[in-house]
Amino acid sequence: MALDLRALALKTWRTVASLQTVVLAASLILVLLPSAWASGKKKPVPQVDISTLVWPPPPDQPRIRYLSQYFGELDLMGKKQVKGGMLERIAGVTITPEERPRLGKPYGVAVDSRGRVYVTDTAQANVFVFDLENKKIEFRGDKAPASILMPIGVAVDEDDRLFVSDSKLHQITSFGPKGNVEGVFGADDLVRPAGMAVDNPLRRLYVADVAGQRIAVFDLDSLKLLRYFGEIKDKDADRTGALTNPNSIAIDPDGLLYITDAVGARIIVYDTDGNFVRVWGKRGDGPGMFARPKGIAIDADGHVYVADAVLNRLQVFSPEGNALLSFSGTGWGPAQFMLLAGLTIDSRNRIIAVDQMPARIEVFHYITDAEAAAEKGGQKAPAMGSKTAAPAKAPQGAQPAASPGPTVEELQKQLADLKAKLAAQQSQKPDDATKGGAEPASKPAQEVPSSPH
Image (cartoon, rainbow, N blue to C red):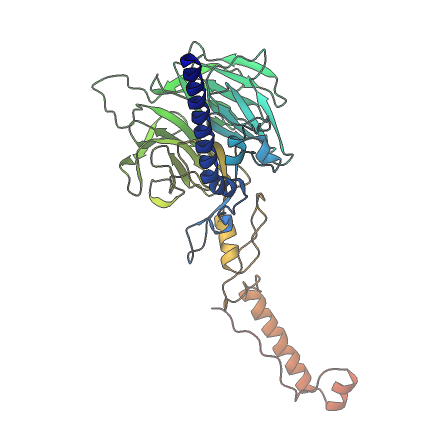
């Protein structure tokens, strides 16, 4: 009997414990339910009015406008990533995100003549091809015979050939416009290649060799190495123009090469023969200073843009290195960055910057000098993407430009002819003048402009 009582007591205790657990769980659910319901509801998320994202800000005339950002294919399709709320997690319901290609760890960026944006992805070992107009994504290097392990730099020539640098295989792969592999080169010439730039007129490909601390120059047609420059050849030599950590390269309209030196926190400029021209920038967080410069690009008017991976800002300079403008900043929102990397500016005046965290590309529009003059004069600015801008409207009150007038000799001849005509009219009788159809001599002659001399 005692055993039965013990068993009954134990059973009762277990039942009470179970009831307590149920009550506790129910209480917890009741406590969490309001917040869960609130989180499950679609609350209005503060949206940033991207039309206000301009630099410099009002009342100054804007020169940079924010356009959009892309994480992957869903953004191109106009869809959003679906996430489960608190109620779904409590109920054990899993919301499976739609399987679409999405950037993992992007780095370099380039644009071809069709406006397709090429972005290297080191995490997925391939190149994303964003076709922003047709709203689709393609890939390069994701299948044989291409072999890519860590794509960093990317460049496109005038024939839309794509060049991808691989820092792990220390080589460059060339793709045709349709994505076919056309060649692999540089394995015996490069240590750790990164950013690249194409010089179409001179038929050259410039490659930043980070570990080699130099720039390698390849022939664009034969893909053979031509020479190196920028390296330190003698430890006692002047190191003013020597590279310590070359990262990215941009070429200006005059053919000068602008190279970011990430460790030296500066920009070094060379001519096409590899001769040192100038250097500017220093370490710091003030205007014109850098913490870790990476991407570099040059706009249609020759301004130099530099992306800073630590300060997460884009700075604009004159070719001589004078700081003109700084925009963007640290954050997860539009026009902000957490780990800036590659940078390019295409023929449509789109500034495309790569952010590694979150993995995305952000697109801005550069308002050219001609467009700014048109807007300031009250004219409609040319549509984005147009290669030529409308002529600036003349300032108010300005006289229209005069067309080329008669020369001094022509004016003198006209004056002599007019005097002879007047003398002939005065010698005629009034009735003869009327019959001849000439104007009466009494009518004053039209004033002749005086000679500019």
